[in-house]
Length: 475
Image (cartoon, rainbow, N blue to C red):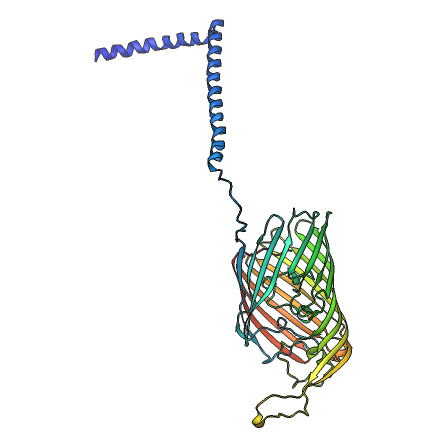
């Protein structure tokens, strides 16, 4: 214990002395020789580090070259195959419907095609689609859409779109695009988009009466987006003339179109667009005939209206259109809340002959027991009539929660004056839809369709589900 105590006393006395000596040496300035020695040491250290870094850089540069040499394949002949890797998607758009009227009256004074009648009552497939699209190469893009329909007569597969179009860098001037094939061409707002992207289950009256839902003829269209602060686009096309409002083609170049659009922003939360359109061509025996219209009703005496509803039209037809759309995001984010105001106006100018075939009551069955067929030709009446008519719709859709929207639409249709109906057709629609994601939506809709004194109350519950890839729709 005495030794430990002695050590403690020595440390207590000697440690302060040693610290004082070390501090004094630290405070004393180094000599010139010491500084030169330290500088030489630093130089040698830096030179060693630089040499090591240069060696590492040389190794890194040599590795890719060696890898490329090893990976380079021997020259071979190209097979010419193009990898088949388009984006493929399926859209399911089935519904269940209930109507207060047992039979559809069609649209008195207008020819109704297979796309413009009311949906099937009860459960139905609706308008489902299979889509494929992708870039063909660095200059062209292609797309194919097959429409799936079902009715009481069976299922139907229709080529809705099959086209190619140029891409930026194809060699055409900036803002110029060329599209060729079969497509939903530029006319109004709704025509370019697929039916499942609509805000309501069904198309408004003007689309049903004048375009049989949509105009998707075979043709060629050129569009030009002009430079400037405002969005401005002009364009036009040449078409076969096989689809409504035409029907039938002798030369394969029976119709043409022209259009112009403007759009822009109002502040940070509001965007708008308006456009004007014309679609002109010749019709050769255009007919409807997809509705369930029967003449044993209040319209039986409207003989002139039957020419427009059930007759065949041959002549010149021209359709004018105008559309307007405004979107407003109150919070600045359309995903949270958005108000959409939209409307379109169509006017059809038509001159030609309407032919109506009626059964020949003088004919009798020439086979016994009522079996056989009528060998007599039916009577055909024709009239030179004016098919001028117009129609419009306006709608508002409000997203009050990120997944919930509510909407209202009013549509009105004025038949040709030569039809002699004396009344307009109208539809009031309301809807409520819930969107679980960008791939799934469920919508409940109510329509009150007024056709003269007839009222058809329609309730439809629709689901729209997308499987796989599907391109976004434009503004």
